[in-house]
Image (cartoon, rainbow, N blue to C red):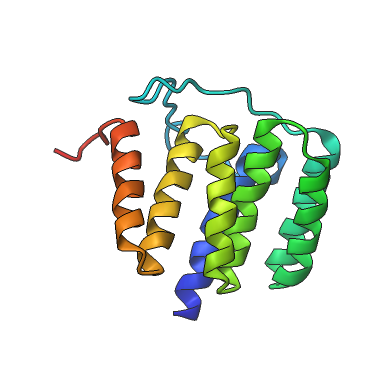
Length: 168
C-alpha cells in the first residue's frame, strides 16, 4: 500500500510539474507522442491560458522538493503561501491540484476533496487536467462513501469528457 501511494504521488507530481517547468524533464527525451490535447470538451469548455508567474512557480518547485523528501506538512505550508500569491485562475487551480495530491498522500482525504474541488472551481487548468481533477473529486467522494455526490460527480465528468480512444 505504501509503495503504491508513493508511486501514485510520484506520477501526480511528475504530471503536475511537467506543466510548471519543462526543464525539470528536459533531460528525458520521450519516445512517445506529445501529450494529447483536448481543445474543447463536450460541454464546450475551451483550453484556457496556462502560465505561472515566477513567484508562484518558485514556490511550487520548493513544495515539490519538500514533498520528494516526504515533508508534506512543510510542502503544504509553502502551497498556502503560493495560494496567497496566486492571481490567475491557472495559478489557483494548479496550486490547489498539487495541494489535493499532497493532502491525499498525507491521508487527509476530506481536505484533499476541498482542494480538488477548488482546483476544478478555479477553472484554470487545461482541459485534460481539468477533467482529471473532476475525476479525482469523484474518486474522493466514493472513497468517503458519499455515493450520491460521487455519482453526480462521475456523471459530470462523463458528460464533459470526450470518448477515450481505444475504449470501444
